[in-house]
Length: 443
Image (cartoon, helix red, strand yellow):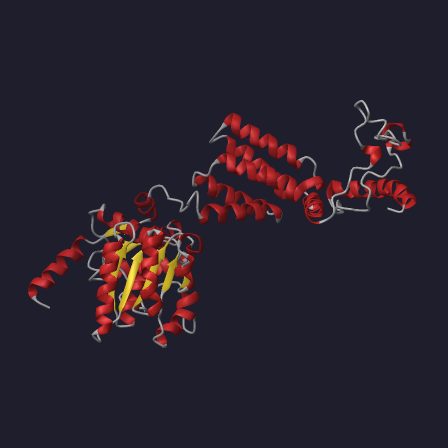
C-alpha cells in the first residue's frame, strides 16, 4: 500500500465513530448470534462447506448484520459489493449484476452483494435480483429490520436462507465495551480510562442489545470528559446515554409482538409480566386506544363469566383513558391489567359463539320454531305464529318447559372456576327442565 493510501486510510479512520472503528475484523471477534453461527450451526456449516448461497439477515439495529455480511465476503473470498435500498435504483442494481456476471464469465471472483434495508426495494427491484440469485451468479445478503415474510417478495424469500438476529446479550456487550476501552489502535487503549464495572454494566443493559448504542455511550462519555486519568463512573455513563430509546415499530413486528406478550401474560395470570409489557408499549408511545381495545376484548375472550366484573372494569378503564388522557390514564390501564391478570379465567363464551357460528355456516339453517315466531302483526295468528308459546314469567321458577331451538345442542359449557362455577350449577338445573320438552318432542 502506498504512503498516500495509508495516509488516506488513516484520515478516514480518525473521523470514524468508535462503533465503526471497533467492527470485528474476523469471525472470532464477532459477538453473538451463536444460534446460527456457532460451531455446527447452519451458517457455520455453509461456510465450512463453501456452500453459501443467498441469505436474508433479519433483526434489530446494532446486532451485526452489516458486519457479518462483510466477514462472509472475506471468509468466502468473494468481492464485496454494498448497495442501500433507499438510495439505489434499478439502473445501479443492473450495473452491479452485469459486473458480477462478467466476472464469473471470465473466471474471476464471484460477488457477494449486500443490500441494506432490502425491504425498501420495490417489487420490480426485488424481481431484478431473481435470475442472478437463482443462477448463483451472486450471493445475495439482504439485511432488514422488517419481517421478510411480510416485507420481501415471496419468490426472493423462497430462494434464500433466513437468519434472525437476536439482540446481543449483556455479557457480549460488556466484552465489546472492554475491548474498545483497551484497544490501542481502534479504541481508547492509549488513554487513561478507568471504566467502573457498574458503568460498563449500565451501558450494556440500557442499550437493549444494540452494540452501536453502547459504544456510542462510551465514546460520548470519554470525548466529553477531557480530564485524564478519567474515572468513567455509572453517573457519567447515565449522562452519556441520556433518555433511553425504546426500539419499537408502531406498525410492525415489535408492535404486534409486544401486544401478543401483553395479552398472553394476562391470560396466563401473570400481572407482573403484564405490567412490564404495558410499560414497554407506553414508553414507546403506543396508541392508548389500541391498548384499551385489546383489554376490552380480553375481558370477554379470556375472563368471560368466570368474573362478570372484568368486562365492566375494562370498559370503565377505556372510558377513563378517553376522559383523562396520558400520563394519568396509565393508572386506569395498570388497574385493568392487574385485575384482569388476577381474575378467574374462562373462554367458555368464546368457544360457544365459535361453535354456534360454525353450525350456522356449515350446517343446515334451523327454522325458527313456530311458537317462537313474531305474533305481533295482523295475520300472524292465521299462520299459527306464537301458538303454544309459554311466557317464562308465568312458569314455576321462571323457567318454562319449552324448546327454543328445535335441535339438541349445548354450546355454552361453563368452566368450574370463579363465578362460572355457580353458573354451571344453575345451568345444570335449567337444562334438566328444558330437556324435558326436548325429550317429549324427540328432538
